[in-house]
Image (tube, rainbow, N blue to C red; front, side, top):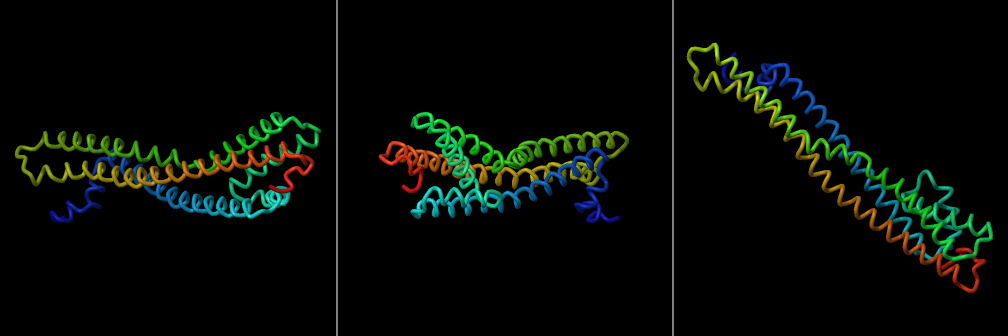
Length: 236
């Protein structure tokens, strides 16, 4: 085997100690899993934004709240987070009205609690996978560093039996160890980049949904306080 073959990435991996090889395998699995999460999360967040924008357009188009509620109920499984939050608040509002509760404070508190609970469930779903990217991004460099340290230790113990040490004998062992660090960075950098980008996107989604909840509550408050409260959200 010539020097160029000995210093190829594949040869360095195959010649590494089993501990370093195990570290590399863990990093490859983490990298593949993080890339799968990145692509899946990108599509999921894009879909959430599209659903929310579509529902907001319908909400502010002048349709009656009852019509929107009926549509949201029928489309519960295929709708977006904002639509389900609206449906939860409207459902609680209608239940309280059916129980002849006319106090505006009680109606609004119940509606807000229902929407807040739905909001938390939706955000838990939107944030799924984000912690995994954060873990890969923060832990992978240290896992790679562990493989490097172990590889360097293994290389130096091999040098103990050599009478003459040259750069040609030192380089392969050190290079094997450094491959683990490179793989750790390869796994970490995309994960950290995606985590920061998606965290920012999720914050904007959360802010828009909280803003919608406040606007919807204000509309219901006007309906309750209006002269024709019996029109339970028939329009706004």
